[in-house]
Length: 69
Image (tube, rainbow, N blue to C red):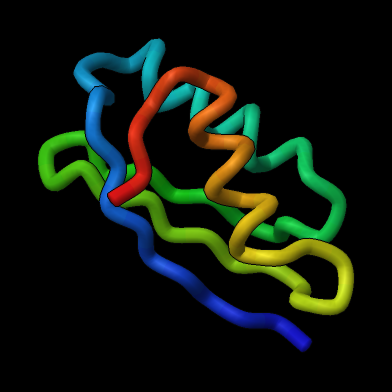
């Protein structure tokens, strides 16, 4: 089933940060869409909760070097 989550992420400051988060989260099996709002520090993710968990998504962001609040 498709779910949506919005995460507050600290440490993103430029286009490279946006691409790193989009690519890191987007590479997870089950993630359908990733949208980053750099100004607000928000990451919106549409995902299939039977294939990936919110914890997996948070870990992928943290692995790119950012802090999930």
